[in-house]
Length: 151
Image (cartoon, rainbow, N blue to C red; front, side, top):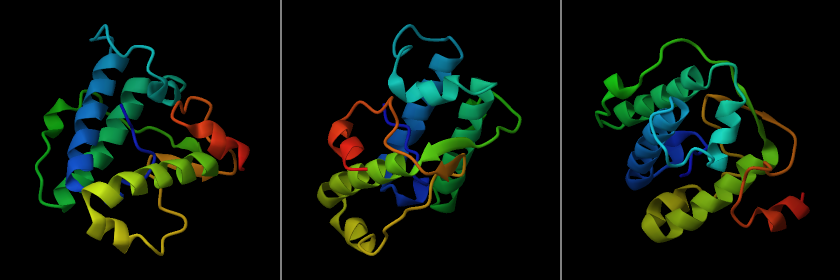
């Protein structure tokens, strides 16, 4: 499960569809509707919010908005909570880590999209997140030690 902190505008079509599916799974987990993924580290920052279900719903709405901008029709009736969620702090180290992770995927899946991002040093985060200075998030489990130690 990867719930990108990056703005969904950067994802290729395969990544955007995968994000939608994974965020719907996260919504089910946060609603207590599954037995799997209940301890997944990507969910920690949502669980820390006053209302995790509203927070994941806000996340999903922004993913659906990006999909609509591209002409996709994601079924927004699958979003089960209403209301506004405040922003979640996102460390600059985490944003940078995810940007590098996405670029490594895009160079293989969508070289053209990858090339168009060549000049971007600091990507825009998903609208749910507000960037603050800091290292890679402690819940990040993928080869982040090297990135953490370089910051």
